[in-house]
Length: 115
Image (cartoon, rainbow, N blue to C red; front, side, top):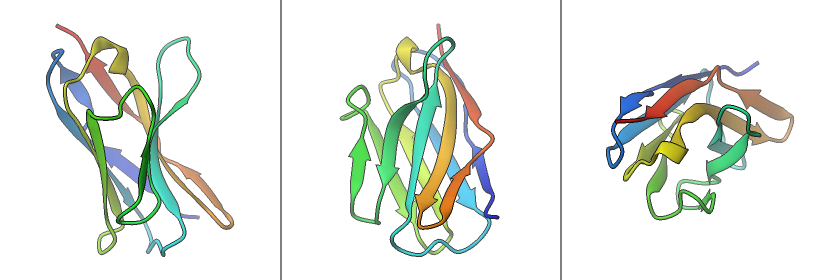
């Protein structure tokens, strides 16, 4: 069972930036999506961004233009660069790996945007 380890969450002021990382415990071949979801208190989990390949990414409407997902296949790591953060971005961010026979979640990392 692949394990996902996230890091990089924390407290940041509105307008600031954070970078999240998620590393998989084993080699991830092409055809598997690695991405991020988030869940705010009292709300459902929502898509933030998905990296389908090194060159293909999808973003949720609320983060498009502010967040950038990238993927390092050599280290089996996906990154989420979050810029121009808003209070609405506050929540627990979960890394996800999906594909044939795989549906794995990380433990989550808290992101709090507050002055």
